[in-house]
Length: 215
Image (cartoon, rainbow, N blue to C red; front, top):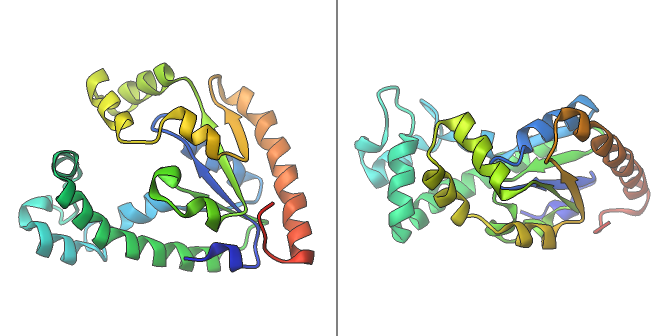
């Protein structure tokens, strides 16, 4: 997937679980950006009658589909956390389909620029080179834990186990071109997003004149 060769300005948005990626993406969308959310794409692929479900059932068995015919996420999560081979098989099924759907969504985008919301952007490898800028949503790890516990009803241990599978806060910040501090409330996000939106609009106009590149 070679997003750098496309005519639009692109941003890769990422952050650890509970950092507020969806909230930030929605705020950029309200300003006219097109959002391509790889998590949403993955969910659609594994929903009832999703395009990836036949291959997943064939590989892992019908027990990994719920009563609606969607992927049993809890059961699959428990499996891949404890079995690296199963994780590799899951990724081999999902990742090519996610890449194709991502390219199709980006090609159909009509916004002033495209934001790719990629939870595992740093971990997955290659995304940093595929986009023009990397935007990291950052917050304290203790805040990540409390937010996810409140949102998902998970225990502190469960949240920390998920965080342990993700890039560290330091690794994400090292990959960032831009950072949004989400340690506060929505009011604290607004000026940061407004400033970056103006920057991305300027980059988008510049790129239209000089062609794709890292900005």
